[in-house]
Image: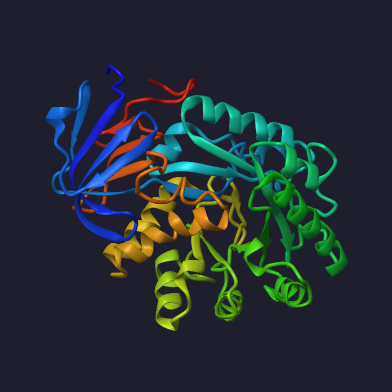
Length: 388
């Protein structure tokens, strides 16, 4: 397929993610140039027209918690989970990822994570990473969280720092203050979000360490992103109270009703509670390990479950399209300070665009920075080592 500088997406039902009606979207190279009711294609040379009639058009999804080099390892070397492949992201509508290290900072490293992020970027994906791991003191590239964030282009925060988990280092409030200070200053110097992405486990205290720390520090609340908050019911109750105070709440795809809440159910409960849904996000935890229950083997998080949870929130739990799409687009972009470059369809934003079929919300097309990677539901540009 010959590359065209100009692409015109015609007659799509546009959620930007706010519903704006039927629109034509003109893409010039990697950016959205115009979003209008009608754009005359006859005056634009060398134009690729993409018919989006009876299709939903929305921003590409941003996944702020994904194990791009694989997670796991808690049951020995044989339980190490493989790296993510480009198609896994594209098939779930994910156009931007933030890679995390996780529990294993012995056999995996920030340099591994950075190299994989650059590899995925070469293949076409938008990529960022967090420095750090479960433990405090945490894994870094330059021996400093502050300098990692300030100096390395792809590092936008620190995480996933673990609390309330037997695999964590049980950091004190002083230790959390120190790492948060480094993230904050690194973010200011590097003009980045400087977020502290916090893994909350199934431990007895749940979200208490985060709440206590945030309430007894001078850091802005928005720089903290506790995740996995739908993993069990007591933790989710704490998350609701935390959200009422203005905190970010990140839900993890694939959680079940056995012990916690699915993403569709959690979103509905949060919405019914009347909290500010602009602070709610959803991430995949793909290629990370899911703790074993009842003697079963470790599970593996997946991007397939991520897109299924988004669909089911709309189709089964009947939440509004606009509300659900925000949790994986503009809300995430604002938390990570990627807005308005990412997370929205508007002039000047990057052309990360999904085209969905109305029936079943199946992915029809995916554009990343204006380049088409999925057509008619099939990945047309795969990663270097994927089967063609």
